Image 1 (cartoon, rainbow, N blue to C red):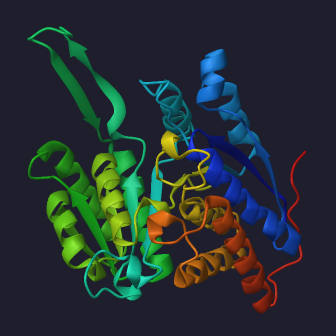
Image 2: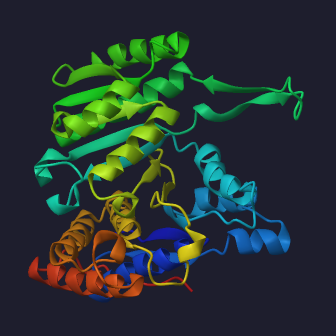
Length: 369
């Protein structure tokens, strides 16, 4: 197996804490000699920005594009940078400049006790959200007129291109075909946004017709949010514009236990991919040991799967499920362990899982100097 390279940006606040535990999992896999990956940490975040004014230079993004297979970001955001300049430049900079148009959010209930809905089993909450990641209302177009006056006008424009809409819809259908899922659902607001909505619905019908074995359904995003709470088992794959996908995927995270269990990936097939837990940097919790590292660890599993190490990824997921079943969690999930102690539990559980599985490979992970 060819060696793969990961760039790691721990970021700010609890990003540093949870990334340390994700790296602990990689180190465990290194000791078990499961895959062939090297990684290097980069110190981009609030501290660097406040000291030097540097956020994430274009040449570093080009370095990631050229020399790395994946980027892992812990979390960024710091109250000392109230306009979040560095966070936007780091996250949105990589998403847009690397053209990572797929935001991939698997929603998997791993323990039914964590679901806030009544009488839901693990199999009732198992779907995936594909959020368009480079267009829509997040494209940064618009402006402000007469700022600070009673006549102030703020305009934010939603950008939707046929190319951008078709490719995210196609990614959702291709995923459904590969995973043998029966239904792809579009979440939009074609009733209130008829121009963008018409483009999305036409593209959804056109691309969907290429996948006759897969059912398709278009639902207004607000109605979809309601139905996800009432009937989550109806859904397999959801595709949505940037803003609606952002909202729906966070609502979906609540169904499985919260953002502390929500991994994500930003993808463009054939290019360096970005992986990040979707929770914030929570500066008030940084260094207290109270941060939940499971979203970061599950994000590391997504990264491993992306790099072709599916066996190792499944091992990480089984280790997390085992810890949840035993209540070996941080207080936000009802446990009593610290962030580092949860990482230790996952590493030990992972070692047991992989050894019981008979070991997947003998490639080895080594840290990059």
